[in-house]
Length: 136
Length: 136
Length: 136
Image (cartoon, rainbow over all chains, first blue to last red):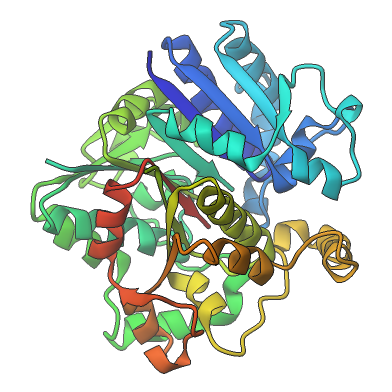
Protein backbone atom coordinates (compact mmCIF):
# COMPACT_ATOMS: atom_id res chain seq x y z
CA UNK A 1 0.00 0.00 0.00
CA UNK A 2 1.32 3.46 -0.89
CA UNK A 3 2.00 5.85 1.95
CA UNK A 4 2.18 9.61 2.35
CA UNK A 5 3.91 11.41 5.25
CA UNK A 6 3.33 15.11 5.77
CA UNK A 7 5.03 17.38 8.27
CA UNK A 8 2.98 20.53 8.72
CA UNK A 9 4.54 23.58 10.40
CA UNK A 10 1.96 26.28 9.66
CA UNK A 11 -1.71 26.78 10.52
CA UNK A 12 -2.40 29.37 7.85
CA UNK A 13 -5.37 28.37 5.73
CA UNK A 14 -3.36 28.38 2.53
CA UNK A 15 -1.02 25.78 4.04
CA UNK A 16 -3.65 23.66 5.81
CA UNK A 17 -5.73 23.30 2.65
CA UNK A 18 -3.00 21.74 0.53
CA UNK A 19 -2.02 19.54 3.49
CA UNK A 20 -5.47 18.11 4.16
CA UNK A 21 -6.33 17.93 0.45
CA UNK A 22 -3.26 15.80 -0.22
CA UNK A 23 -3.88 13.58 2.82
CA UNK A 24 -7.55 13.08 2.02
CA UNK A 25 -6.94 12.50 -1.68
CA UNK A 26 -4.29 9.95 -0.74
CA UNK A 27 -6.61 8.20 1.74
CA UNK A 28 -9.50 8.05 -0.73
CA UNK A 29 -7.08 6.60 -3.30
CA UNK A 30 -6.22 3.80 -0.86
CA UNK A 31 -2.98 5.23 0.55
CA UNK A 32 -2.13 5.56 4.20
CA UNK A 33 -1.36 9.12 5.25
CA UNK A 34 0.49 10.26 8.37
CA UNK A 35 0.35 13.93 9.29
CA UNK A 36 2.81 15.29 11.84
CA UNK A 37 1.93 18.77 13.11
CA UNK A 38 4.81 20.71 14.62
CA UNK A 39 5.80 24.29 15.41
CA UNK A 40 3.03 26.74 14.40
CA UNK A 41 1.25 23.86 12.73
CA UNK A 42 0.43 22.46 16.16
CA UNK A 43 -1.94 25.39 16.77
CA UNK A 44 -4.33 23.90 14.21
CA UNK A 45 -4.83 20.93 16.55
CA UNK A 46 -5.67 23.01 19.64
CA UNK A 47 -9.24 22.63 20.89
CA UNK A 48 -11.31 25.71 20.21
CA UNK A 49 -8.65 27.32 18.03
CA UNK A 50 -9.86 28.40 14.64
CA UNK A 51 -7.23 29.00 11.97
CA UNK A 52 -8.67 31.92 10.08
CA UNK A 53 -6.18 33.68 7.89
CA UNK A 54 -3.97 33.06 4.89
CA UNK A 55 -0.27 33.94 4.79
CA UNK A 56 0.81 37.59 4.84
CA UNK A 57 2.01 37.08 1.28
CA UNK A 58 -1.50 36.41 0.04
CA UNK A 59 -3.73 38.61 2.21
CA UNK A 60 -5.24 40.09 -0.93
CA UNK A 61 -6.96 36.76 -1.59
CA UNK A 62 -8.20 36.27 1.98
CA UNK A 63 -11.74 37.47 1.22
CA UNK A 64 -11.98 35.46 -1.97
CA UNK A 65 -11.04 32.28 -0.09
CA UNK A 66 -13.32 33.00 2.86
CA UNK A 67 -16.14 33.74 0.43
CA UNK A 68 -15.63 30.47 -1.42
CA UNK A 69 -15.83 28.57 1.87
CA UNK A 70 -18.80 30.52 3.26
CA UNK A 71 -20.77 30.06 0.06
CA UNK A 72 -20.06 26.33 0.02
CA UNK A 73 -18.14 26.51 -3.28
CA UNK A 74 -15.19 25.13 -1.36
CA UNK A 75 -15.32 22.90 1.75
CA UNK A 76 -13.60 24.01 4.96
CA UNK A 77 -10.28 22.39 5.85
CA UNK A 78 -11.83 20.39 8.71
CA UNK A 79 -14.48 19.01 6.39
CA UNK A 80 -11.82 17.91 3.94
CA UNK A 81 -9.86 16.28 6.75
CA UNK A 82 -12.96 14.61 8.17
CA UNK A 83 -13.81 13.15 4.79
CA UNK A 84 -10.33 11.63 4.62
CA UNK A 85 -10.41 10.38 8.19
CA UNK A 86 -13.60 8.44 7.51
CA UNK A 87 -11.48 6.05 5.45
CA UNK A 88 -9.52 5.19 8.61
CA UNK A 89 -6.29 5.75 6.69
CA UNK A 90 -5.20 9.14 8.04
CA UNK A 91 -3.30 9.37 11.30
CA UNK A 92 -2.66 12.72 12.97
CA UNK A 93 0.22 13.30 15.33
CA UNK A 94 1.09 16.30 17.49
CA UNK A 95 4.76 17.13 18.11
CA UNK A 96 5.69 16.50 21.74
CA UNK A 97 8.41 19.17 21.86
CA UNK A 98 6.09 21.84 20.47
CA UNK A 99 3.42 20.95 23.03
CA UNK A 100 5.97 21.88 25.69
CA UNK A 101 6.95 25.10 23.91
CA UNK A 102 3.32 26.25 23.90
CA UNK A 103 2.71 24.99 27.44
CA UNK A 104 -0.01 22.73 26.12
CA UNK A 105 -1.09 19.30 27.32
CA UNK A 106 -2.58 16.36 25.46
CA UNK A 107 -5.99 17.34 26.83
CA UNK A 108 -5.71 20.62 24.96
CA UNK A 109 -5.70 18.79 21.63
CA UNK A 110 -8.64 18.05 19.37
CA UNK A 111 -10.11 14.60 19.86
CA UNK A 112 -9.23 13.64 16.29
CA UNK A 113 -5.52 13.66 17.16
CA UNK A 114 -4.26 10.06 17.17
CA UNK A 115 -1.16 10.59 19.24
CA UNK A 116 1.73 12.69 20.47
CA UNK A 117 5.13 11.89 18.98
CA UNK A 118 8.64 13.23 18.63
CA UNK A 119 10.83 14.03 15.65
CA UNK A 120 12.39 10.55 15.67
CA UNK A 121 8.98 8.96 15.30
CA UNK A 122 8.15 11.32 12.45
CA UNK A 123 11.40 10.43 10.69
CA UNK A 124 10.48 6.76 10.89
CA UNK A 125 7.09 7.51 9.32
CA UNK A 126 8.73 9.53 6.56
CA UNK A 127 11.30 6.81 5.84
CA UNK A 128 8.52 4.25 5.48
CA UNK A 129 6.52 6.44 3.10
CA UNK A 130 6.55 6.71 -0.69
CA UNK A 131 6.08 10.47 -0.64
CA UNK A 132 7.07 12.79 2.19
CA UNK A 133 6.55 16.53 2.09
CA UNK A 134 7.33 19.46 4.37
CA UNK A 135 4.46 21.96 4.34
CA UNK A 136 5.35 25.32 5.87
CA UNK B 1 15.90 7.41 -15.39
CA UNK B 2 15.77 9.54 -12.24
CA UNK B 3 12.67 11.62 -11.69
CA UNK B 4 11.81 14.79 -9.76
CA UNK B 5 8.29 15.84 -8.76
CA UNK B 6 7.67 19.35 -7.49
CA UNK B 7 4.46 20.76 -6.09
CA UNK B 8 4.59 24.55 -6.18
CA UNK B 9 2.09 26.58 -4.13
CA UNK B 10 3.57 30.08 -4.36
CA UNK B 11 4.32 32.51 -7.19
CA UNK B 12 6.73 34.67 -5.22
CA UNK B 13 10.02 35.03 -7.09
CA UNK B 14 12.03 33.54 -4.23
CA UNK B 15 9.93 30.40 -4.47
CA UNK B 16 9.70 30.18 -8.27
CA UNK B 17 13.48 30.48 -8.68
CA UNK B 18 14.37 27.45 -6.57
CA UNK B 19 11.53 25.52 -8.22
CA UNK B 20 12.57 26.16 -11.83
CA UNK B 21 16.28 25.91 -11.01
CA UNK B 22 15.79 22.45 -9.53
CA UNK B 23 13.57 21.31 -12.41
CA UNK B 24 15.93 22.65 -15.08
CA UNK B 25 19.03 21.32 -13.37
CA UNK B 26 17.34 17.93 -13.11
CA UNK B 27 16.29 17.98 -16.78
CA UNK B 28 19.76 18.98 -17.98
CA UNK B 29 21.18 16.15 -15.85
CA UNK B 30 18.93 13.69 -17.68
CA UNK B 31 16.12 13.46 -15.14
CA UNK B 32 12.44 13.82 -15.86
CA UNK B 33 10.79 16.59 -13.88
CA UNK B 34 7.08 17.05 -13.20
CA UNK B 35 5.91 20.38 -11.81
CA UNK B 36 2.42 20.64 -10.34
CA UNK B 37 1.29 24.22 -9.72
CA UNK B 38 -1.50 24.62 -7.19
CA UNK B 39 -3.03 27.26 -4.93
CA UNK B 40 -1.18 30.60 -5.28
CA UNK B 41 1.39 28.83 -7.43
CA UNK B 42 -1.20 28.56 -10.20
CA UNK B 43 -1.03 32.32 -10.70
CA UNK B 44 2.44 31.91 -12.19
CA UNK B 45 0.86 29.99 -15.07
CA UNK B 46 -1.75 32.61 -15.91
CA UNK B 47 -1.32 34.29 -19.30
CA UNK B 48 -0.14 37.84 -18.97
CA UNK B 49 0.48 37.56 -15.23
CA UNK B 50 3.94 38.61 -14.16
CA UNK B 51 5.15 37.41 -10.76
CA UNK B 52 7.15 40.34 -9.51
CA UNK B 53 7.86 40.27 -5.83
CA UNK B 54 9.65 38.18 -3.25
CA UNK B 55 8.07 37.01 0.02
CA UNK B 56 7.15 39.57 2.69
CA UNK B 57 9.90 38.02 4.81
CA UNK B 58 12.59 39.07 2.36
CA UNK B 59 11.36 42.38 0.95
CA UNK B 60 14.68 43.95 1.88
CA UNK B 61 16.35 41.91 -0.87
CA UNK B 62 13.74 42.64 -3.54
CA UNK B 63 15.81 45.36 -5.23
CA UNK B 64 18.99 43.31 -5.13
CA UNK B 65 17.25 40.40 -6.85
CA UNK B 66 15.50 42.60 -9.42
CA UNK B 67 18.82 44.32 -10.13
CA UNK B 68 20.61 41.01 -10.66
CA UNK B 69 17.94 39.97 -13.16
CA UNK B 70 17.76 43.33 -14.94
CA UNK B 71 21.53 43.49 -15.34
CA UNK B 72 21.67 39.96 -16.69
CA UNK B 73 23.77 38.67 -13.79
CA UNK B 74 20.93 36.26 -13.13
CA UNK B 75 18.45 34.89 -15.68
CA UNK B 76 14.71 35.42 -15.16
CA UNK B 77 12.65 32.50 -13.89
CA UNK B 78 10.97 32.00 -17.29
CA UNK B 79 14.33 31.84 -19.01
CA UNK B 80 15.51 29.19 -16.57
CA UNK B 81 12.32 27.21 -17.13
CA UNK B 82 12.55 27.59 -20.92
CA UNK B 83 16.11 26.28 -20.87
CA UNK B 84 14.92 23.21 -19.01
CA UNK B 85 11.90 22.70 -21.21
CA UNK B 86 14.09 22.58 -24.29
CA UNK B 87 15.27 19.18 -23.08
CA UNK B 88 11.70 17.90 -23.41
CA UNK B 89 11.96 16.45 -19.91
CA UNK B 90 9.93 18.95 -17.90
CA UNK B 91 6.16 18.64 -17.73
CA UNK B 92 4.04 21.40 -16.22
CA UNK B 93 0.60 20.76 -14.75
CA UNK B 94 -2.00 23.18 -13.45
CA UNK B 95 -4.23 22.10 -10.55
CA UNK B 96 -7.82 21.61 -11.71
CA UNK B 97 -9.38 22.49 -8.35
CA UNK B 98 -7.43 25.73 -8.10
CA UNK B 99 -8.48 26.71 -11.63
CA UNK B 100 -12.06 26.59 -10.37
CA UNK B 101 -11.23 28.57 -7.23
CA UNK B 102 -9.79 31.38 -9.32
CA UNK B 103 -12.57 31.13 -11.90
CA UNK B 104 -9.96 30.41 -14.57
CA UNK B 105 -10.21 28.22 -17.65
CA UNK B 106 -7.60 26.22 -19.51
CA UNK B 107 -7.46 28.98 -22.13
CA UNK B 108 -6.25 31.38 -19.43
CA UNK B 109 -3.08 29.33 -18.96
CA UNK B 110 0.29 29.89 -20.58
CA UNK B 111 0.84 27.78 -23.67
CA UNK B 112 3.77 26.00 -22.03
CA UNK B 113 1.39 24.25 -19.61
CA UNK B 114 1.24 20.56 -20.53
CA UNK B 115 -2.00 19.72 -18.82
CA UNK B 116 -4.57 20.21 -16.09
CA UNK B 117 -4.61 17.59 -13.35
CA UNK B 118 -5.95 16.90 -9.87
CA UNK B 119 -4.30 16.01 -6.59
CA UNK B 120 -4.61 12.26 -7.23
CA UNK B 121 -2.65 12.61 -10.46
CA UNK B 122 0.00 14.64 -8.66
CA UNK B 123 0.30 11.96 -5.95
CA UNK B 124 0.91 9.35 -8.61
CA UNK B 125 3.69 11.48 -10.11
CA UNK B 126 5.23 11.98 -6.69
CA UNK B 127 5.08 8.27 -5.88
CA UNK B 128 6.87 7.46 -9.12
CA UNK B 129 9.62 10.00 -8.47
CA UNK B 130 12.98 9.68 -6.73
CA UNK B 131 12.75 13.11 -5.17
CA UNK B 132 9.53 14.96 -4.40
CA UNK B 133 9.44 18.39 -2.82
CA UNK B 134 6.74 20.82 -1.66
CA UNK B 135 7.74 24.38 -2.50
CA UNK B 136 5.62 26.99 -0.71
CA UNK C 1 22.07 3.41 6.77
CA UNK C 2 19.08 5.73 6.45
CA UNK C 3 19.69 9.15 4.98
CA UNK C 4 18.00 12.54 5.18
CA UNK C 5 18.49 15.37 2.67
CA UNK C 6 17.23 18.85 3.50
CA UNK C 7 17.21 21.88 1.24
CA UNK C 8 16.83 25.01 3.36
CA UNK C 9 15.84 28.30 1.69
CA UNK C 10 15.04 30.48 4.71
CA UNK C 11 16.99 31.75 7.70
CA UNK C 12 13.97 32.64 9.80
CA UNK C 13 14.18 31.00 13.22
CA UNK C 14 10.91 29.14 12.76
CA UNK C 15 12.38 27.50 9.66
CA UNK C 16 15.90 26.87 10.98
CA UNK C 17 14.61 25.15 14.12
CA UNK C 18 12.66 22.43 12.33
CA UNK C 19 15.57 22.00 9.89
CA UNK C 20 18.29 21.49 12.51
CA UNK C 21 15.98 19.51 14.80
CA UNK C 22 15.25 17.04 12.02
CA UNK C 23 18.91 16.80 10.99
CA UNK C 24 20.15 16.34 14.56
CA UNK C 25 17.42 13.86 15.46
CA UNK C 26 18.28 11.90 12.33
CA UNK C 27 22.02 11.96 13.12
CA UNK C 28 21.48 10.86 16.72
CA UNK C 29 19.29 8.04 15.42
CA UNK C 30 22.17 6.85 13.23
CA UNK C 31 21.09 8.45 9.96
CA UNK C 32 23.29 10.52 7.70
CA UNK C 33 21.94 14.00 7.07
CA UNK C 34 22.87 16.38 4.27
CA UNK C 35 21.76 20.00 4.54
CA UNK C 36 21.91 22.21 1.46
CA UNK C 37 21.46 25.91 2.20
CA UNK C 38 20.34 28.03 -0.72
CA UNK C 39 18.68 31.38 -1.44
CA UNK C 40 17.86 33.21 1.83
CA UNK C 41 18.87 30.10 3.73
CA UNK C 42 22.48 30.79 2.81
CA UNK C 43 22.46 33.83 5.10
CA UNK C 44 22.35 31.50 8.10
CA UNK C 45 25.81 30.26 7.14
CA UNK C 46 27.41 33.71 6.90
CA UNK C 47 30.07 34.41 9.50
CA UNK C 48 28.88 36.89 12.09
CA UNK C 49 25.31 36.86 10.85
CA UNK C 50 22.76 36.13 13.52
CA UNK C 51 19.31 34.98 12.37
CA UNK C 52 17.02 36.62 14.86
CA UNK C 53 13.43 36.72 13.79
CA UNK C 54 10.57 34.40 12.98
CA UNK C 55 8.44 34.69 9.82
CA UNK C 56 6.17 37.71 9.36
CA UNK C 57 3.26 35.31 9.69
CA UNK C 58 4.17 34.48 13.27
CA UNK C 59 5.62 37.71 14.66
CA UNK C 60 3.17 37.49 17.55
CA UNK C 61 5.13 34.51 18.90
CA UNK C 62 8.58 36.09 18.44
CA UNK C 63 8.92 37.10 22.11
CA UNK C 64 7.67 33.75 23.37
CA UNK C 65 10.28 31.93 21.28
CA UNK C 66 13.10 34.31 22.20
CA UNK C 67 12.12 33.99 25.86
CA UNK C 68 12.19 30.19 25.71
CA UNK C 69 15.69 30.31 24.23
CA UNK C 70 17.00 33.00 26.58
CA UNK C 71 15.70 31.15 29.63
CA UNK C 72 17.25 27.90 28.47
CA UNK C 73 13.88 26.14 28.16
CA UNK C 74 14.77 25.66 24.51
CA UNK C 75 18.26 25.37 23.03
CA UNK C 76 19.37 27.80 20.30
CA UNK C 77 19.42 26.53 16.72
CA UNK C 78 23.24 26.49 16.63
CA UNK C 79 23.35 24.38 19.79
CA UNK C 80 20.95 21.90 18.26
CA UNK C 81 23.03 21.77 15.10
CA UNK C 82 26.30 21.42 17.05
CA UNK C 83 24.87 18.51 19.01
CA UNK C 84 24.03 16.77 15.76
CA UNK C 85 27.35 17.57 14.14
CA UNK C 86 29.20 15.91 17.01
CA UNK C 87 27.95 12.60 15.63
CA UNK C 88 29.91 13.28 12.44
CA UNK C 89 26.83 12.42 10.41
CA UNK C 90 25.64 15.87 9.35
CA UNK C 91 27.14 17.56 6.31
CA UNK C 92 26.41 21.18 5.52
CA UNK C 93 26.62 22.61 2.01
CA UNK C 94 26.34 26.18 0.77
CA UNK C 95 24.80 26.81 -2.66
CA UNK C 96 27.43 28.06 -5.10
CA UNK C 97 24.99 30.09 -7.22
CA UNK C 98 23.59 31.89 -4.19
CA UNK C 99 27.10 32.74 -2.99
CA UNK C 100 27.51 34.64 -6.25
CA UNK C 101 24.12 36.35 -5.93
CA UNK C 102 25.08 37.70 -2.50
CA UNK C 103 28.63 38.55 -3.63
CA UNK C 104 29.98 36.22 -0.94
CA UNK C 105 33.08 34.04 -0.96
CA UNK C 106 33.82 30.75 0.74
CA UNK C 107 35.81 32.66 3.36
CA UNK C 108 32.62 34.46 4.36
CA UNK C 109 31.05 31.18 5.47
CA UNK C 110 31.00 29.69 8.96
CA UNK C 111 33.77 27.18 9.58
CA UNK C 112 31.22 24.41 10.14
CA UNK C 113 30.27 24.48 6.45
CA UNK C 114 31.56 21.29 4.82
CA UNK C 115 31.51 22.48 1.24
CA UNK C 116 30.12 24.59 -1.57
CA UNK C 117 27.96 22.78 -4.11
CA UNK C 118 25.50 23.37 -6.92
CA UNK C 119 21.94 22.25 -7.52
CA UNK C 120 23.04 19.14 -9.43
CA UNK C 121 25.06 17.97 -6.43
CA UNK C 122 22.07 18.60 -4.16
CA UNK C 123 19.82 16.57 -6.47
CA UNK C 124 22.24 13.65 -6.26
CA UNK C 125 22.15 13.83 -2.44
CA UNK C 126 18.36 13.95 -2.47
CA UNK C 127 18.10 10.99 -4.86
CA UNK C 128 20.33 8.93 -2.57
CA UNK C 129 18.29 9.77 0.53
CA UNK C 130 15.33 8.03 2.12
CA UNK C 131 13.66 11.29 3.07
CA UNK C 132 14.15 14.62 1.32
CA UNK C 133 12.39 17.80 2.35
CA UNK C 134 12.25 21.38 1.12
CA UNK C 135 12.20 23.79 4.07
CA UNK C 136 11.22 27.34 3.11
